[in-house]
Image (tube, rainbow, N blue to C red):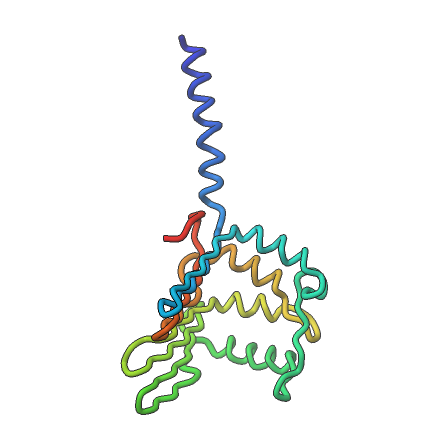
Length: 183
C-alpha cells in the first residue's frame, strides 16, 4: 500500500512540476482591435519563440540578434546612445511636455521606467511604459546596430503592459505574463 501511495505521489509530482515550469514561461501577447472594420488580431507567443524567430530571420537580423540602424533625419545611432546615457544618468525627470488646446504629450522617467502619455480631449489615447533596462539593452549593440536579442532577453524579466494605444478606431495592447492565452 505504501509503495502504491509513494508511486502515486511521485506520478502526481511528475505531472505538476512540468505544469508549474510551463506556467513560469513568459508569453508576449499582442491584441489589435479595429471595431469599424470588425477586425481583431491576437498573437500569443512564448518569448522563447520570439528569440528563435529572430535567429531564423537572417535578412533582417545582421548577426546575433542585432538590427542595423540607418541614419535617419541626420541622427546616428551613436548620437542616440549618447543622449540615452545622459538621460539615464539624470534619473527621475520630466523629459518632454507639450500642451495644446486638445492634446497633451508627456514623456518622463520615474524609477526604472520611461513613461509616454498622449491625451486627446482629456482622454488617454496612448500609454507606453518602457523599462529603462530594455532601452539600455536595445542600445547595447555596437556601431550602427541595435541589439534586439538583448532586448528580448530583458523582456523575459518584464511582466504586465508594455504598450497600450487607444484611438477612436483602433486599440492596441502589448503585454507579458505567464498565460498561454489572452485575458
